[in-house]
Length: 572
Image (tube, rainbow, N blue to C red; front, side):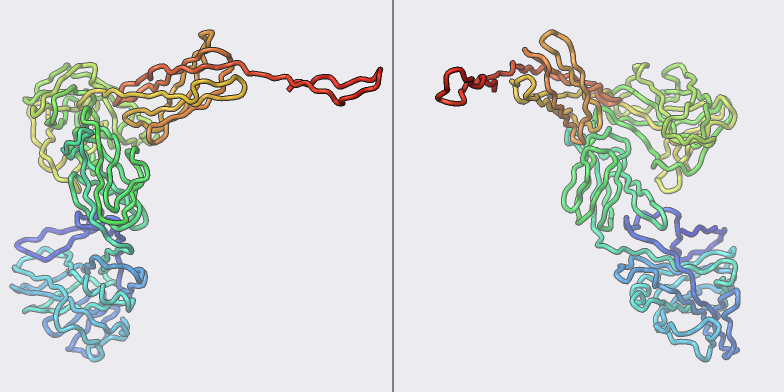
């Protein structure tokens, strides 16, 4: 989306709709936003009614003397599109001093005029009432600046025709105003947001695996946007308008992810994957279920909008307020730049006094960091060995102290998320509260949860060389794509070890042909992960029997001459 620079203005109130490089909270997820530029623009002047000003670098609007015409080609918007919004935006370069001035935009159904042919005498007519107005309420301005008009209804009405003409003129009082034309320093723009499928209301939230709703963490929905993708990070709970279709959805932090629950017209391809595909076919609910035994606390939106670095001995910190009393497990730092630098980690109480002796950590580049000089991403510091308990409702701080001037650079978030007023900086002498951004430091609190793995077999008795035994089971809570180890114990106590991968539902299966006769046993195990202890199943037993054989005996004839032979018996 087009960027722009806002200039200082004093004592001025305008009806403005500023553009943003990220979708606003009101943007429909999945919608398409395009910026169209005029295919023709010109102003007409009654004082010289036959003159054409189509090549002028400005569009002049004067009280009942000059009007500005702009034409846009809408053919790039699909004919079946539903227009959600349209904003006409022009750069105001000059405005005479008049109290109560109001410039309106009026639609003309005529799109036959040409930029180099339009004059006052042949100008098209336009609607008697303004579609939208911008009102100026004081004398003093610092220019240039942008003015925006909501022309949604005009774009909706003109879509089938493929072109749109808008006219600027004074609608109340007025004197003189000059805007930049498409030949000028800043081209006018028409920003249109539209959808090509039905839009549904989707409620997003998170719950504990106990069923209690605390709405920790956030849910990110990635959708096509312009020529790439945009990620909408939603605080919880929230209702959002989403266009029907498929999107990548991810649960971020808060609880440690267990699974997805959906209702109505919302479904996911893998209910056990923290990042999966969500399909919207109607209104409904998307709920992330998490393990309440381990919680990630954070106050940033995951976007690094800037970076901060300080001098040795200085530091920054974030204040955390835990919901549950439990162990402090991990400190997480998002670095916008890090290349094997050393940091000093602080853990402090509510009065910003160290709870443990600050210690140095070498920032190694994790696997998810790009292998370049300007590496970035989350870096985790294990605090579980300090056996620190943080209490529900009692603040604590995690800080980073610089040991090298200017490096590494910690991520700083301010652009789209609400500032939580939890970030602080230390200049070596005093603490200062940060009110304009959130430092990207997070904390994990909780403990490792237990897990279970089952082991069943079928059949319980097989014949050697002819039959196989099938071992199956499930990891609970479900863990997909992890290694399950199966240990088969032969009758002579020797061991056969086999491994299989679990499915997305945490299920596993192995089919094995035993090679010895006698009593066998088998057990299954998985090693666990950072959130769950590993587990070993109870032992299951089966029997392997010898293969049986039969003899059949027959003769080739019922009579035989003396001295002749009969066929030998055959083994069957």
